[in-house]
Length: 206
Image (cartoon, rainbow, N blue to C red):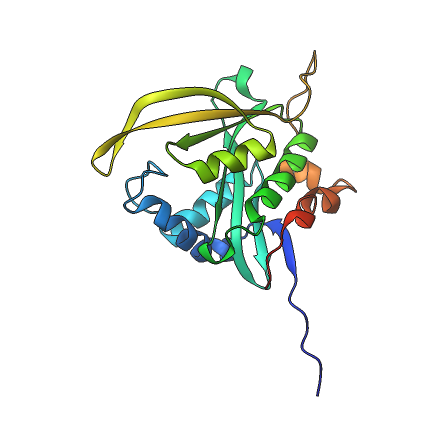
């Protein structure tokens, strides 16, 4: 009898085909929860569009555990004006079946390795309070608390505070070049190493 092929865990760029699984992971954070301030959970088609738009400039990563999306992390523009072009906002979400397995930490490690190679300098993450688990994750990664916006959002019948955390991705250069497009970094010889930088931190069993 042929031996069953061992399923592998990998970190890779998101694809359109991942949209349904990503939408399912994200949905509980929207429906009846203040974790996300979105009023309605996006459909798989919505997520597919977001993936395509994001990957034009920024990484969107998934932890693929034997063909199942265990979690995902991505970066987006922080603000529109040119002076902010070296800054990003980041998010990470993990499937309930893969909590406490290092998935978010591994994804973030790879995400920041890629962002650093692109030339981004600052990362920011907003967390609706209270959320002890998310706060612990971000501080373990190296984020530092920055500011709390008191009562900034109303959802699920309550006003909520949102705290922002800051991470320096790379040292602030005195004369920075514009960040490189994601496609340019993908062509570099170290791309595979950047993508898999966080893999040793993930303990997910496929």
